Length: 414
Length: 119
Image (cartoon, helix red, strand yellow):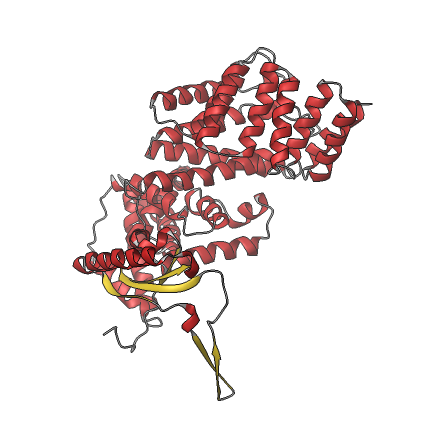
């Protein structure tokens, strides 16, 4: 009887660790002013919980209890270390005089937002922003992040150590940016989330399991930011990710080969993700503050609504790409627009646009530009042109499934 | 916390009237910073053509003409400010008129015990 009670409590501590540890950690960073000290304190607090709760019962507010214990443990640790390190003495004094009670429950969500903005500070290099966010906000292990991004764990660990040193030495603040800085700073956060998503979405072979996890992690991050800061572009990005993710099961064969949108079995698309994504796009568009993520989300929504490629509202997609190109000048957007024009007006119209883009030289080394050109030439039965463009794309492609796809298309030309 | 804001730009990119205007605006900024208690010091530098470099190797002093490194953009001046944190320092750097033409590099000051403060 007693034994099962202890086991139950152990399970409850585990559950609270999963649901609350990142919140406790974020608040401890604010109280202690140091990432490493906060992490240590958080683990110590959970160790004390595992020891005491089975006998004494769970406190009424476990989170507040954990923050409070973590803070005491940190002060203890600083006192012990002060004997060896004079620079910690000042911190110890400051913590001692800053009051004992920890009761700011309403501050906890702010702390999570503070943590996100600090990890995604533009004064940190982008690869460090990504690594820090996954480690500190999502709580992923350094080894897991390293393997997902195909870098050696010591390299990634060093990236994180350097970033934390800069946060400390340059005094990157632990705060939500001011209203004037918010749009720019939010943009950096969204960029980090989308990069994490794409890292998990673009690769579909090899270590595919961990990579799908990255997309899931990015969606979770998107939901978190959405809950804390429901800005239209946050909705737009979350919608975009959900709508892309909804096609995951339809975009590769069982052997890992790529399936183009037009050939995908649309019954494999995830309807729950599609309806959530569509609703978010509507909400973001209704705000009248329309940004690049919202427009990309809207394009994904048009695809999601269509029963087939032929029945897709290509005029709408061309219009959305035109708007997107006005917000964000990019030859890749021009390329996507050209492909949509080809679907609306026929391959000859699209080919004229792609040739103009390639003539500008910006996408000369982008394999998808040549692959798109090859496809339009194929449809126009310009076999020699198609073959040359497939060869060019093959010389530039880096991903194995994409290479196999291009080789197949080249063979089919006959 | 103290930050050094180092201003780099291409000296040849400034017309005389642009430079005059920049000095005037910079003086206004120093006054505003001073009123906030954030101003520690600031100055433009004479052009890099006036630079002299000194090194001591094996106890021997070596003096050469020119800057430490030949670059397209040169160090042209600095602000030394007291800011709450990096975001505060970034906000000040964004108000430096020369930032519109060149680049402001923000470096936190390393506090060294025993070092005399600015006069």
